[in-house]
Length: 572
Ligand SMILES: *[C@@H]1O[C@H](CO)[C@@H](O)[C@H](O)[C@H]1NC(C)=O
Ligand SMILES: *[C@@H]1O[C@H](CO)[C@@H](O)[C@H](O)[C@H]1NC(C)=O
Ligand SMILES: *[C@@H]1O[C@H](CO)[C@@H](O)[C@H](O)[C@H]1NC(C)=O
Image (tube, rainbow, N blue to C red; front, side, top):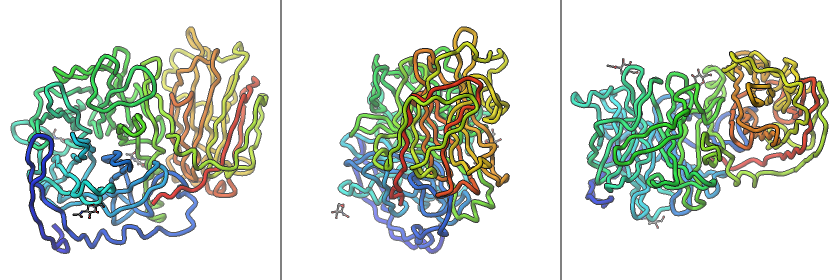
């Protein structure tokens, strides 16, 4: 414990669930955390206008996201001391609308032996009576990963500014008996109640390359015991930030994590440490045996489904009981060099909160930005029934192209000339890389050129290609960053995914949320999401432009385009 952390403790008892728990009040003054809210250097072209980020320093995973007394809470992994990872605490912001955020002092920071070397990721659970509890990973004096509990000090405070830690911490830890690897045991999920009225929680882990969702159970949220078998496991390496929740089979509403019944399926998301992708399967949960089984055809790992096929990691959902929806929040890492991050004084942003639900096919999830962000729309421009001839580019002026929301739908009449999809073309990202936006085709590439400079020296291309597959047409969606910036120090990987849309009977829609260094795109109404980080050197602020393009030989129709400038949100 740092010597500036002169503190006094007092103890009191609090009732949680069925048991009496002793808690330690954290009246610590952390002088080194003060100054948290002073800002980064001014005039930075890559800072966001409406994607969440603090004024400066490093951020990563969203943590413990919840709604309490009508206030949304976002905690997040934060380094108060710099723009690189380290010294991790739980920073805290609250919001009434998931758009504008008010900062608070860090909520959870090292103060006990069980978290003295860091307060890593975790989740909130709403206990009976509406009382929030947070389980999080602490790093102990031996640098072991252990699980801790914190609860609000004052339940009358809707901003939940002070948190007290259980004196029983750590509640779960690696031991000689359980053989859990102490450097691979982290990120507790939101807990859920089983039919036996016991809580269940899952912790991410691994044995060799077997990723594990280790299950613990508890009657009182304090005394936890490990279940004999994990909830699930698969050969995809370490599982970070697991998330496990039910989704109704009908409609777009969300449900509480404890809900079980014939009208829900379950989702298990894991963040793959090996590849840094958030992958999920859809399946069934047997709440007596406590086993989750992916549906047949729901593929594990990188070749399966991802929340986002671009830069997006360590996400977490929560159930918003105020609006009956499940909301997904995630971290968007930088694509710039560490040296550039240090120079600009910050690293990491969060994606737009997305509502998430099960697609009608029941084979994948659908995501859409929460409707609240539409409040930021201004300067509407629109267009309808515009033919985009092969080889054409059209510019849209009248919106601030560096900070915009663009929705477009394309219509294809004639499929005859679609190129054939070779049977070996199974990797969509590779296809997008080989056939970037400048490679001419037949039905495509067509889409948007965003954060583009005049003359297109710089541009990020978000586009589609349509192929003739075995017995259907196949839609490929790409986000090509190969010409996003003249600065070649950045990660310029091109991203891509196949999009499950019946293109003969439906229009092909694309929405891109453009925010200076972020291009967050939703294809097919949210069936494929791709987020890119880009750092243009010419196409910044007022110099940024917006175009639609079609470099295929066949004409495509823009059936509708709506674009808006986005106002700047209050993000801390
Ligand atoms: C608890 O929070 C409420 C609402 O902010 C406040 O009025 C009250 O003084 C707080 N109680 C304590 C003991 O701090
Ligand atoms: C435990 O996990 C760490 C981190 O991945 C790894 O380096 C180490 O080899 C693992 N130890 C054992 C005994 O599996
Ligand atoms: C974050 O981005 C950097 C730079 O592109 C990369 O080296 C690192 O692996 C990324 N980390 C994650 C978790 O995505």
